Image 1 (cartoon, rainbow, N blue to C red):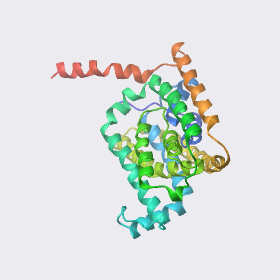
Image 2 (cartoon, rainbow, N blue to C red):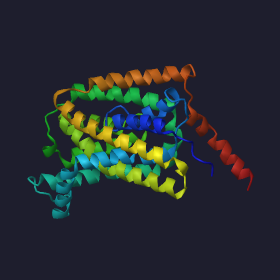
Image 3 (spheres, rainbow, N blue to C red):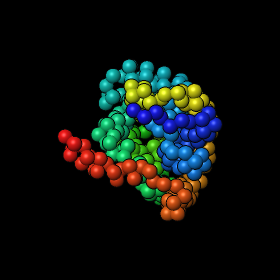
Image 4 (cartoon, helix red, strand yellow):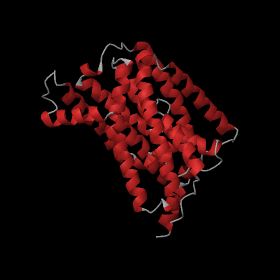
Length: 302
């Protein structure tokens, strides 16, 4: 197996900073991590090993931020083992169960679509289109959402619609927080509640995905001599992710998401321009296009 691409401490810190800033905002961290290495650092994608280790930072950040809530929700789940027989006043049990049940769709589809996620969906053209299309849907959600429902009053049906919407986050460029906040607004949640439930849904989702990817790279010995820079990137990502979580929940109390809508559209259009003029290359698309050829070669060699 070839050695993973060497990543310097400076590159790891810059990418970790970017990961932390974008992980929980509705702007797609995947899009930024796909563009930044080529555009800013003149390097290829740092690879799955780097992503797996750096992802630990935001995971620790969000668990730390919601630690008290998570303890209450876990106690609620233990107290009410039947998610369909929860008294209306037991808010902790309700939110705990709704979060777990809402996570199941993305886990199931993540396993089923793993190959496409790592190949076809990684195209920068797909990312650009996703940035723009989700921005349009988010704009519609802002216009038609009633924003009258608080998180404490969320129903099982509403929570599961948001959970199923989270499956769209498997398409790079959509943004996991972007699709869940959009779905929350469309279900009538107020902005802060939509953001908070989005973050709660992210905890089991990104933790499971992050640990799974970390297990794969450790098993394949892909980290190599890059452990130091990787950990530095993870620490930076975690620190900035914590700041963003705290800031964003406060921001959503008083503001709409228009700034993120505009940003997504501008970034998507910019990405298309950069691709058109070959400022950056769609390596993932090229690798995907070669997959059938590689398969034929392997078949012919049997």
